[in-house]
View 1 (tube, helix red, strand yellow):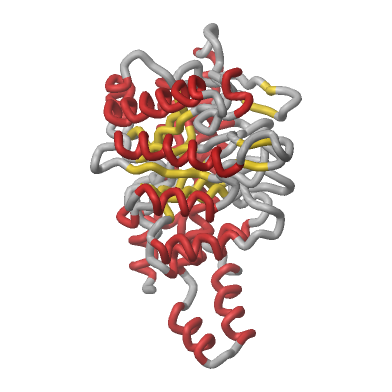
View 2 (spheres, rainbow, N blue to C red; view 1 turned 180 degrees about the vertical axis):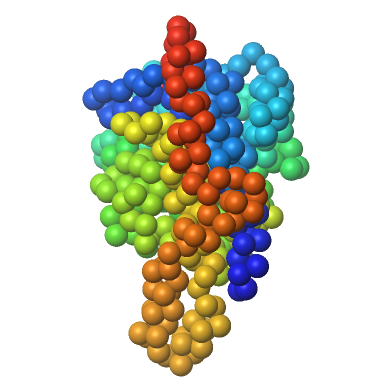
Length: 387
């Protein structure tokens, strides 16, 4: 790939921001409040627009319902457009209501299942009002003990709920099914892995696709292998990018294992699916517990950009030649040469060519926005888990 082609791909790249990452969060023991945290979805959009203003590649913000519930979603979409943003993925929440202790759409109680499905359908209404393409579903549903419930029956209930929601979608909308190995259910999760998600998506149709959350795997899992298989099947719909050391840590992407991020994006670069036309949403899914919210998202966007640039610099011709020659060390060296390249000057030049400052974090720090929102956002209830 020529440098001009590399720059064109980087210029076209889009990274979606999660609204919840702008709110207060913490560990399971304590939520740590910060000054200037947004108090509603409109202020979350305002904060997201600051990330876009200094990076130029983050024009969409995902919503979480009911955390981001507003009276007029059309007004929220217009507010986003006025700030150079758009509403991205709509994320449903069927895991925080007391009724969902034994599951939502797979709950043995039909009344609870009906309630959960009604919420999912409400989220499709939000998609209609905001122009969103994707409904992302993650279920905390599962069991803690052998014999607690019928495993196959729960899969039947899940399939029925997914079918109801899928049939409600417009022709331009998609169902994106996320998976998680464990937590909060420790014996079985009803959607524990990419295979389970893929089976349900295949049964639904072409507009049902899989979301790969990089923190939702067993230790040592080869995530890029999963990514490659899903791309090959045409079923990779989205990423939730974050980092983990132990479990679902939701740390800044690239913080724990930047080489893993490179390896994942290398598969995407190899398949030429890095730009929005691929249909794959590259989204962050993070909880910034001790670091400032907006700079943390800027840093994560930069980490994805840097890993993407390195992946684009892989000499595909030399790599194929080494592979065809069975040159194990030579093939590995091609990847490592790209990974070891300092791409920060390249990205700085790209930003400058786009009329942006070379250093996004420095640009934000000099903007005075952090000081202004800390002074202005007095009163009300800061956004956080459950709000």
